[in-house]
Length: 277
View 1 (cartoon, helix red, strand yellow):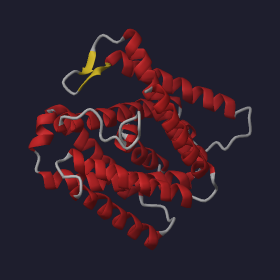
View 2: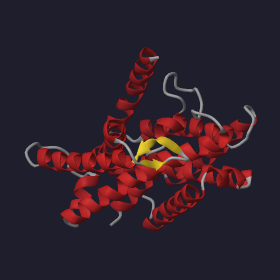
View 3: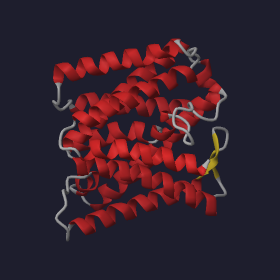
View 4: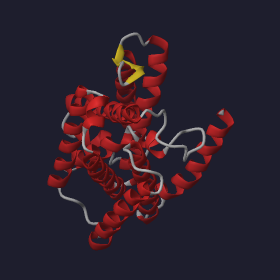
């Protein structure tokens, strides 16, 4: 199992890293569309569509995504768009995490599918917009999410006692979330300190927040870390409502694409919104 996870992870890195560091956003945009298609198929399966019917989801997402891309190419998207997107994410997550997995299951299937299409497409657009802001900006957002996820896991495993959401994801703890916030703060301080001595591209999520002062930096990172954890919990809620452990088996040893992207999905639109201030 571990060998399989390592092989899959290395394969994904070999595909992702060249697209991430290439000056043109085209490669990352294409890779984003592939992930978008896979994640939308998984969303359809998790929400009651049969195997073949679930392919309607990636067809719709791909059509909408490429339609926007072909018309607007690499133009920046307005602040109002991202404000609406983040508001919908916030409302959706808070509502369903508060009401539980049964409320998701009770929501009409059509609405769940439409919501999935909207949330996934906007996240795909946010990935492209973050790349346009600069590779360093996108990397800082990715590192923030990955650091929070890793820190929450190990902190929760070592000190976790109080369950964060026992009915949705029993393995997550309040202590793990606290560890994630502290780790992200340390990441930001380290990045800013190193960038003051090493000539790096410094337009990052950390430098953008620091423009408003240290309290704003710490508060902003706190919100981003909470958003990351909420995205993870939201996908766990959907899987629990569907009665499955993983979103699919598309990634051997890792589950599905949604399982790897869950924490990043709401963070990317929020990170792009922050860049608009």
